Length: 414
Picture 1 (cartoon, rainbow, N blue to C red):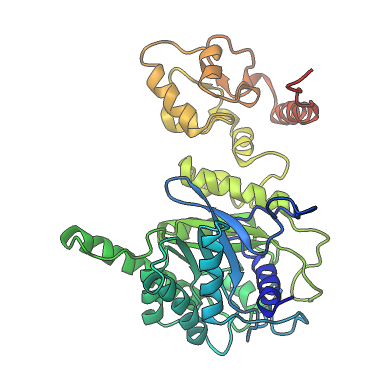
Picture 2: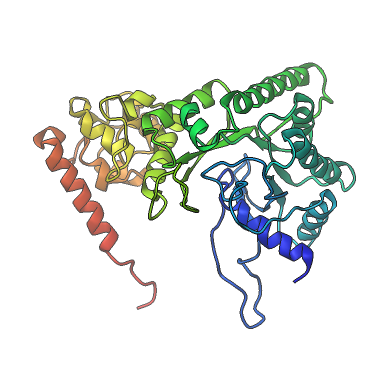
């Protein structure tokens, strides 16, 4: 195996724990000289603002690290194979993979070697070389290293499409326990700087047409779920603040993957994937359904229900708000009905001006009636939410979803 391929194996494997851009996770290898190989190191997918799915080369610059974060596979005390690319190697890999049509962009993160600025300077050089020497116009996502100087962050914003500063642990108290060399100010300060700079460039663009692009795809971060004792209420409050104050484009959540024995993190048999999925659903409600955090979780219910999604959980905890009259309720309340999405809610509000809507209309609009029927009233509806006690209603919903999961998909042929 060539040295570059060996580095690629090590550093793409180490990068898979970063969820700030999603990965296909497929392990289909090439057999019998077939076409393609999804086992190829470091290829993951991300989505552009216009909805296109692009393939990215997802690697670490190095997995050497001066920090000893208990949750991280690249931590200083972990006995793993180490490697580091040079700037030229990352540039060559990106260009060659791009020319072979393997990728459309680069996701580059890194362990911290020597210092934050020493590492950040190399990441910036990769992006700058790609942009200026190779006229590369593909997507570039760089990791912004906590504690890096504003000058380097500014350059990174000019040459990359997106930057992410990973918070990882959802409270500073827990961060100090599992990553004693890190602190919240070193993470939040770069976010604030980049947010302010992006606004400044946006204002300049109104007056100077040739103002360069600055961080056109915004910022993101990652929170690890389950590596520390924070409740979902604390996690969602933090994410809500990041969306509103630092104006982050995305907060990604990663169920803690038990990577080695360390008494600073809990012993888990498997990553808390169901909880991770519920947190993503709650995040979706915050960003697109106009929910507030205290509607989803509260001091009385600090953690998300793992059996039902957060919208059903909200409806079951608020029987006084249901059933919702589809022909009279306002848009915000229709959005809170399980089984009704944003597009369906808009169609309902626009269509009911012209006619009184019934169940057939809702079905044609794409409403998931198997779930919504328990929480709405309209001509043709059979279920009346108030006729059932919350526990009974919950069992009915779980039963109907269990039947749906067990029903085999029909074959197209015979």
